[in-house]
Image 1 (cartoon, helix red, strand yellow):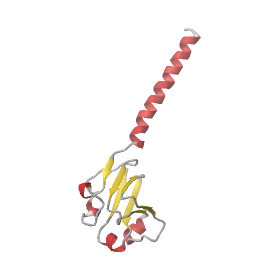
Image 2 (cartoon, rainbow, N blue to C red):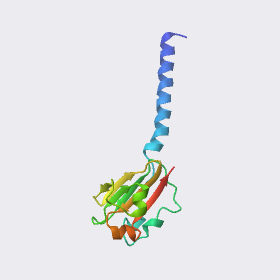
Image 3 (tube, rainbow, N blue to C red):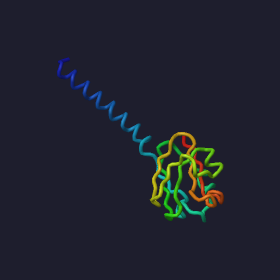
Image 4 (cartoon, one colour):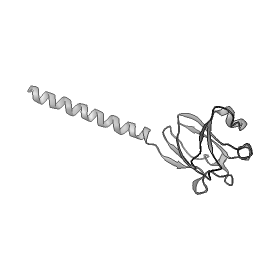
Length: 128
């Protein structure tokens, strides 16, 4: 086999390996998009705490929080989720159309009003 043919074979093999890697990684990077609360959106009138039930989430999936601007979304830790504590080290989203990518494990979201979170405007999502 000539050197040129061996070189072309290596390039083709590397190209194929790169393509396969990209295909597998795209599934992780570009996960499913979920609209939180479905048509009702991120709203106090919906039963937010039950919304994740029966759904299978993966790391890389995106949650879209469509809300009235008064209902901000806070990404919190598990303790702050349980206690509706929005004074901790939460990341706050205020646009009313926020897109948040899930990480592997527990993902916790609350509203920034103590009465709203206490009435169930919060969700916990476990992503595989």
